[in-house]
Image (tube, rainbow, N blue to C red; front, side, top):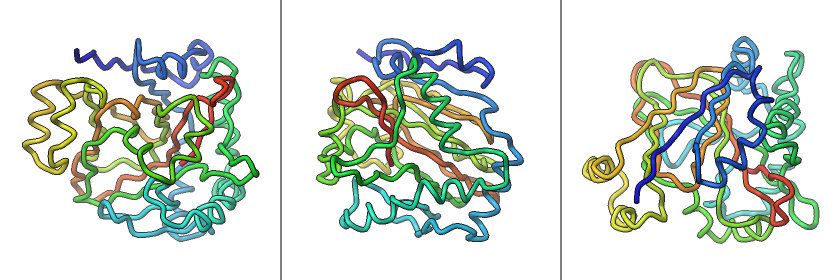
Length: 277
């Protein structure tokens, strides 16, 4: 049975009133998304975006193989060079501080503090291997006009071999997505989420269809009409991307879509949340 997709929308000042939010979303039994408005100042993010566009960062930007645009960081499920991945990911904590230097915000510290509050004071920590190597803290995506991302659900990624060592650290193959908008396009580029989970019986046929075809979207929408999760610059979105089919619609206009995001999952001991990208 398809369940409704519920969203809770709050201001950053009200985060303390939602201390069980991550556990609620992870449970899959109540609401499935939380939007925290005004978490980061718009001028700060505008300055960060300018630094990225001027390449004033040691983070490596690469053309995306999946959409028109670029990505700072690697895509773990599709990674073929794990040594290169861990070498690059080791630079993320310091380069995050450098991106925000002089702007009055420590991005990682602020994000971890907010997420820890939403986790009921469970620690929220960057995932690392048993021998201490850090996973990538976040990725930054620029999607150019005309770009889109096909419908998918993130728990599919756990089937990939590079995800298996990470999965050994987690309670199970379930992850949330947490991302921040740095720039929103003139039109389109909407995160569209379907109240259809990859484990639902109705999803079995969908999983075998062409994910780029409009006929596939029509099939999904006949089963589960979509919800659009609109966020403005500075808003944080946490949602159950692991279970739910979702996509980013085609971007129109002249302005690119920029986001900065990570994934979250419960540790194997269920005593903390780990984030990674």
